Image 1 (tube, rainbow, N blue to C red):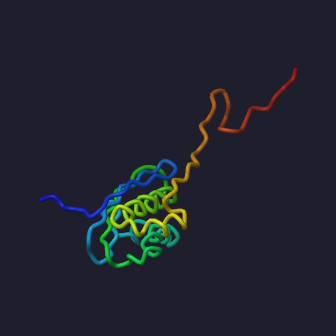
Image 2 (cartoon, rainbow, N blue to C red):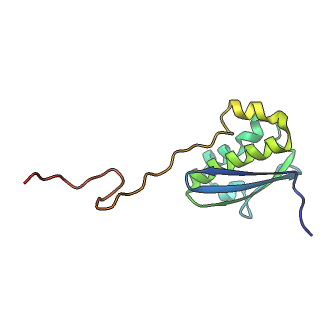
Image 3 (cartoon, rainbow, N blue to C red):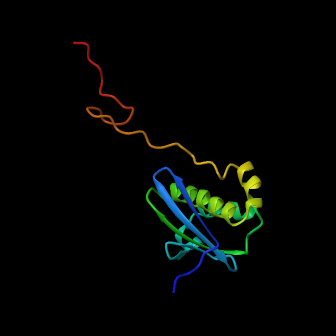
Length: 131
């Protein structure tokens, strides 16, 4: 039996991608099959994930199911915030202005710069010798 979701949103940050699903419930947040506080022991990352629900006053009205891949914990937390914001707008258009005002609907374009060939890093160069 397939679960029906009220809304779905995809969020991205750095190299992380989060698929967020909302369904009516009591406010539990499950990330890759684990609870929020179990997945993000650092309270700052957990706070970032919960921000869209706080801003729109939907703290206990949705159960959130999240699949997140790639990157580190910071990028994953940002991707979850972006995806959750998009899902909340899909669920109710009235959530849009408050999320947009806080910058949660904007994808952060900053990525790691690639390493160049023949050099030790993205910016670092080998010492130049004239002779």
